[in-house]
Image (cartoon, rainbow, N blue to C red; front, side):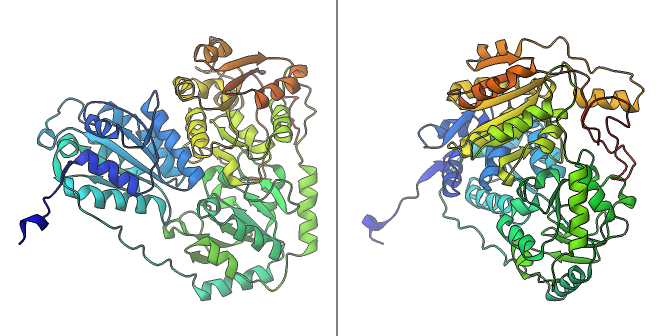
Amino acid sequence: MNPSTHMVPVLRSGSQILIEALQNNGVKQIFGYPGGTIMPVYDALVGSGLKHYLCRHEQGAALAADAYGRVTRKAGVCMATSGPGATNLVTGIANAFMDSVPMVVITGQVPTALQGTDAFQEVDIFGITMPVVKHSYIVRNVSDIPRIVNEAFQLAENGRPGPVLIDLPKDISAGMGETIETLPAPLPEASKPDPVAMQQASDMLSRARRPLVIAGGGIAISDSVGAFRAFIERTGLPVTTTLKGLGIMPTDHPGYVGMLGMHGNGAANHVVQNCDLLMVVGARFDDRATGHLSQFAQSARIIHLDIDPAEISKLRKADVAIVGELKPALEGLQPENKANATWLGQCAGWKKEFAWRYDAPAKGIYAPRLLRDLSRAKPEGLTITCDVGQHQMWVAQHCSFNDPLEHLSSGGLGTMGYGLPAAIGAKIAKPEDMVICVSGDGSFMMNVQELATINRYGIDVKILLFDNSALGLVRQWQEIFFEGNYSEVHLDDNPDFAGVARAFGVKARSISEPEEVSQALDWLLHTEGAAMLHVAIDSMENVWPLVPPGKPNHKMMSAKTADQGTGNGK
């Protein structure tokens, strides 16, 4: 061999190879927090061109990556060190798993030789996260890094999306190896809808007298919103949505009857209980949507469309199951006739009967009315990220969404503290859009430290903070179901939230009177840079309606039936 043509292998560190593999998979942003065992990766980050966002808690990094993944439909990436760094990511990983969000999680690990010795900051994050990841890896060789990273992104983003964990021992990230070109394995061909099941479903839709469609989050995840809306226009079927399905149908669409479930609209809950055919698309019969499962849509036959065969007949037996990609299934369903006018008229009647009311005689600011006004005033392209609690349900009930990506909320896990880091991830994913975090005083304190992240990077996030000096939803349940025995729900020692925001460099103001709302909303929407509007509301205000535990959806409690004397009365 001619010595002049002999190629000397180029040795590079595992961390350098990791960074290159991330870049080859289209990664431009990472959310994370450094520490001992992940330090070689942070060393390789310098000068790489990747933008790293230093969040102030690893949970904040994971939740920001979650929102980034929801908005872009590409895996958000978060990174932390071993031990507490890794365990602090777990809630964010579980949140992404429950809501089928693509995410790649990279954790540092103690060197291979020390594993199993209870070394400093050693935890078995592989074992801890096994129930809440789609797949996971422990890297054993530097040469495996490109293949593992390629597979991780492929698994996270395809099929039913979810989080994938890569646990990286320090001796591997610091060790040297050759760069090996590795192409991703080809994706398996998407299965085509079973023609027999498709025909059966079309026939059932043609024969149904009282059909209804439940639209779930899987429609947005699979980028099938356009196909779904075309199907509804073609068939005229009435539609209800789950929490994660909000925005799949425009709120003002005549066939949309609202969100169903525990805090759903009365119209939606009555329609679902009276239908004779239920077509469930990209939803999973969650308990908060169904109420008492055995009494849910008792007279209805079930058509279930989902990409995940594990969801079919898991909770409610499907008469016809269509497993696979939603878009071709929706395009292929061809019932012979549209939904009948009598049934549609009945649905419209319930929709009118149970329309939200905003004339509650509240003494102070009425949160539902404020959120309705926000929806009316919002600019095009507004994204709302929501925390968990009463405000989350009020947003779902009273804000209008014309696209599912306008509403980011922790659905399956119900993670308090989701809203603020999610707003960071959403704004970074779509910097041209306005992003508002709607939070409550309890949830906001869970990840309040991320105000520092907003200030550090000049992230233009708006915050609407409802403050009732209580853990409102827990207090409401204690009032109704525990005879008013209020246990550990009072937050009357809250800080001056506007002062806290200003201390972090975020503009802020507070309001407490109804006549202040209009001007304050205008200030929030038009203030340049990050801003927070702190809104004091009645600590005894409740979310209505409410389906009590163990009851069917049409047995809703209202302010009237609960003898509260306020609320929407429906």
